[in-house]
Image (cartoon, rainbow, N blue to C red; front, side, top):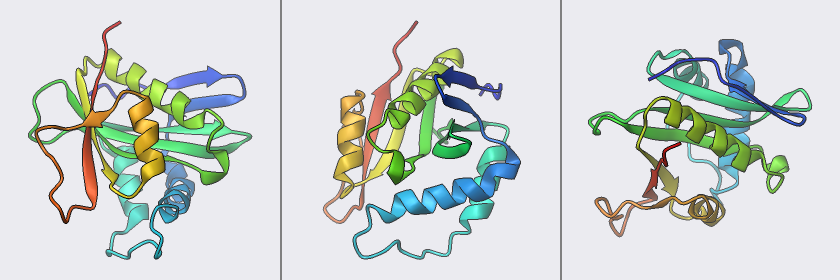
Length: 170
């Protein structure tokens, strides 16, 4: 995977590669976004999210992009080559927009930057897992062309739905 710096400017919105020093605000944004789709509160699973984000930012075979607006991080996306997947496949592990920036184009701009990076790297398909009850996110992804992965339909007790995206050529 190409680990080039991404720097995309759209008006007052900058989308760029996240820096190691930004792991804390990224972790905080992640927590705010996750809290919106767990009606009974975000489950504690023992994950050290700060360490997880630090690892994601620093790993050589993946990338974390962030959206900076008005001097603060308002969106994040983390992707990497999918383990065990065919060449040309990437896994979008995390994609979050600060809830106070929903419906302002932040997510669409961030997604476009991801697709641009994937095309530059020769990626043909992308996959992600979305919380089954996160209807807002599911509608967002569907509007961008993500579809349920027919090879992995959810079992009745699954909490996540696997989605696939075809990365169109130039």
